[in-house]
Amino acid sequence: LPGQTPETPSTPAYTRPVVGGADLIAFLRSDDLWVMNVDGTEARQLTSDGAAKSDLQFTPDGRSALFISGKCVQIVDIETAVVTPLTCFNSAGVLDAFEISPDGNQVAVSLDHELFVVPFDLAALAQAHTRMDIRNLHGCFTFNQNPTLDVRWSADSNKIAIEMRGVDDQNKGVDLIRVLDISECDSFDPFRLDEFPGNRFTPEGYTVSGIIPSFDWDGNLLFILNGIVRNEGYGSLYLYNIETRRAQTLLPIDDSCCYRDARWSPDGNYLLFAYQDMRMAAASVTLMYYIPAGIAGAGANFSPLLPSDFFTSARESPRPALRPARP
Image (tube, rainbow, N blue to C red; front, side, top):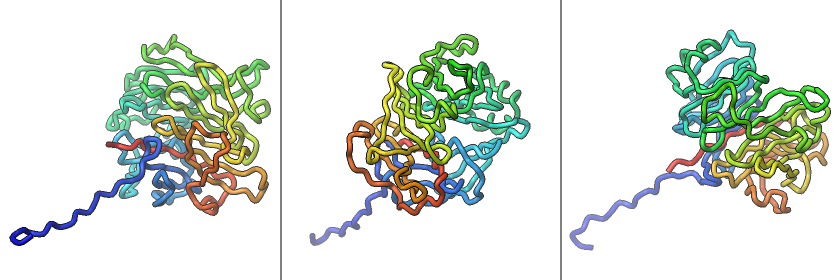
């Protein structure tokens, strides 16, 4: 209108798509860290050292990803791709796990298969390089009854699920998942909520290998894990409910095997996993899917997040992590 200054059209702020309460996926390709949107777009590489990595997760502020490489914990800035060492435990035989609690207050650290739950204080952790240093952080809970291999937290940060080495009914060494309430900080007598597979169910390949290649917890009642059929860690998915203590087999892609590295979305409504079609034998490729958990196994058609030639090795283990979307 006459006498008025024309307004400059505003450019809407960029926002990533949000699915399942997540907006970003971190994952491994050829042992390097990548990130992408939850719809598979804008995949980009953050590291290029090719060193073996595990325990991918996002820091509580969502600005960085964290992972284990060898005996060290590393942090990489999502935007700049700058990698910063947090700490290294050079005197340890192995660093099994480093899992931050959902509330960001604690971290579960497994050194030489012994578990310590300590405050998540970056400055203090940066000065911790030995088991004694970790002990001196005066954590809430320790566990050394069985060798600890991996850890997951409950949504309320009061319980942990420990993947540990135990024995079955025939006294054979096997992986077991033990769920403990650690809210009382009692390392001597924590309340055991459940332990499985045990006599509850038997994943494919478990009788022979005794190994659970990967597992995850929705933080409430449901666990997801896989057995072993092919390529050192791919098998059928199993959904286990710690309330009913029952398991069911999940084959969400064409009712066929095989899967690994399944992860729950932050809101517990979606599943992220890697898949290989065993029917294609040596010609099978690794694909990643992010699907609604409620219709997994209902015969729905899903599209993979990335092109079929993105992963180049049949033994790829993407080990993904989902970043909770922030308001």
